[in-house]
Image (cartoon, rainbow, N blue to C red; front, top):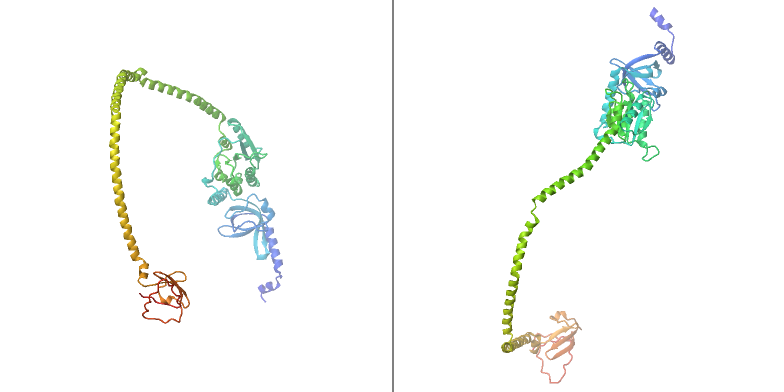
Length: 483
């Protein structure tokens, strides 16, 4: 047996669990605490258990990572997909799949570039949701009754805001105290914005007309709480106009894009939300003076216009001269015109009087009587002529009616057959056996019944003349009559 074979034969035997435990102790002893820089990959949020599982990768390798539930809740920087970080933790193995992983205890950005990359990616994602749309922006009230301020109650920011408000226009200020830096900062700021919006109108705590979210300047990492997604969403959802005043003029956070107005500094925010009281007083006084002076100037201008128009009008004597002259001339002509009119009417009356003398009236009455007699004679002759014409016409129509009447036919020896209902029967086929019939002759009617006993005759016999005064006999069955 060779030496290599003897060595392999004398090697100790391990169980899988023993070997896994030995490897774990070796890795943990050699790499107790490590700081690893890499890009977060495969992160989909915390597991239902509260633990977070993902990977750290670079250009050439990948390292599994886990953050336990208790540690995850305490992390200041939460993992995000694609974020470049420096993770601090312990390296260990996972026997269940023969792999190794890092148990992360803290996360931090891998330099300012990583922070900016994270902010750019978050900005693009939130902008795609429409949270930064200008159409969502609200106008600030001209003079709010109550101003809500979300900031630290102990910093210089709130003192600067109050001082500036007192200089410009003192207003009631409600301060919602929050931490403006640290792990809980973002949650507190978001809760404060929503808290102001949840205040009822007319409640014991007045609802602000405008909200100012303020913080002083600081490093990029110090301002990250105001770029948190929860803060941005709360600002975009605010129904109260919101002013973002975070950091100095050169500092930019994501709440600046979601706010209705961005102020470069907290002091500038105070200047935006209220006007200058002294300027307003001066403006009101100026407008008041103009309001008083304007009617006076208008009255003076109207008075001057009236005087100018009055000078253009003619004098009363000029306006009345011609009417007065016409009146005088009319007054002179009136007596002569009245006398002439009376004379004309007197002549007309005399002419009428001459025509109305008794002799003239008798003559006219005689003429009227003669004319009346002539008209009466003409009327009588016209009536006689009309009467003769109508009489002749009536005689002609009577003769025609007599000729056209069926009575004339009956007089020639024919008979009219009627059924029991009084309707004329025109065909023998319409008569049933035993049917009651009524025969009308020129001199009367006879009631008969149709029967089968009477023979049918092609040529009906001529009836013998009936003695005068003798009533006709009732005939049973159909009978034909021919003159």
